[in-house]
Image 1 (cartoon, rainbow, N blue to C red):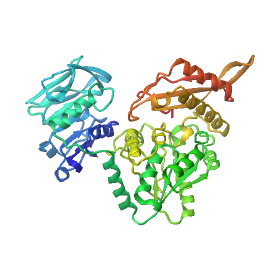
Image 2: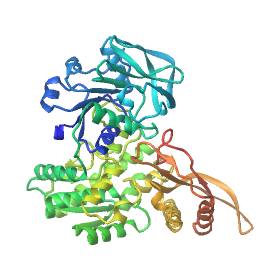
Image 3: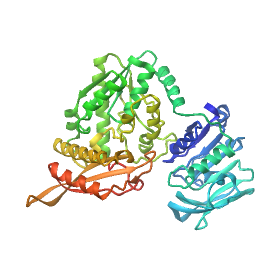
Image 4: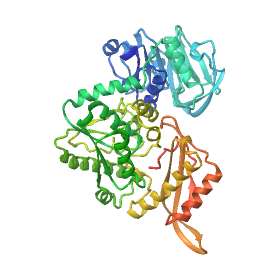
Length: 513
């Protein structure tokens, strides 16, 4: 492995890639592998440490996911998180049992500060838990180093600290001192080498792209969002004029988005970009479709068909590049281990047709949003491009609940622009991870100009996040919300009521669909 990095074995957790990201934040290279990797491959790669992820299974079941038993004899430190802890306990002769009640969400722990995994951590911390099964007996020569306040075993270690298990999730930002705990394992216990950063990632991807594409040509789909813009810049840096950027206007972009995107890419990146209006065919395919999963699949399929048709204008092009990120992969159920639950199919992952003629190039597939921004800065992209709020590939198709029509699209475009403009006016935009409006298929009674109205309900959403895997609703000042509501109702036809979404992720998602 590069830089004597960290090997992460995936057991189907939604947080596996988040573990990898936290390791990289310490400038330590990390890579995710399937749980059933062989000891021969582990020895060949020679990681400085191994981390076992969480997962939805129970270690005591016959079909539970296991590791090669020889890995337990590996000479370097191993950290187990959640299911990983339970697997270590079970493998070394302890007991794990299903209980009637579990721990979900925040849980307070009492720590044994004598263990160096908790160096520079207070005696009591709040942590993020997500488990039903519990450790009821630890193996011999092991000790308990943390319990939750309800006496559930929360952390264990063997006699020489070469094997450590955490029932909680230090990788989730809600865990207090989670980064410190991981750093203690990586630096103090495993003695990992530091030095990996965005510059290294760019260099590696340029090599990979050149090797993959060779002398062939490639088209990259751009949407105006941060991900596709950074992907276009990275690919352009790697293979130059062998790549052509294509923006397909599916009719579901923000107001004036297509025009703004094309101009920005031409001016900032000198990218060869072409725009094609395919809105009529997308909207005809979506007519009468209300199910969000079906919408995503229709949009994903039509994108590929449109790209296949348009690519013929540029000759024989075997490669299609897109700005897929790892949260897209995780939520679509396509994690490394292949055991992740599908939260929602992203159009560019779960919505792609199986029989497409392109081979996909996805240089950002292993990154989270904030890592993508770092890559964009490394590539020299303008800050205002790099730090734009995320915008989903299916666009307003996932922000119009229910049936999609041209009238409803225009309504949402106008309302969304007003909301974003006001956030800029009140200097809140850069404090927010993502903000947008959602058109809801509910009509409400109102009074406008002394007349009764019966028009649409509109929801506003704004969240803070680091990586998109978890998020908290942003506390917009009352004055800003009042301004947004007043301006939207006064200026947007067919809207007479505005509400604000104060749901965090989890239990909600950032987008509504």
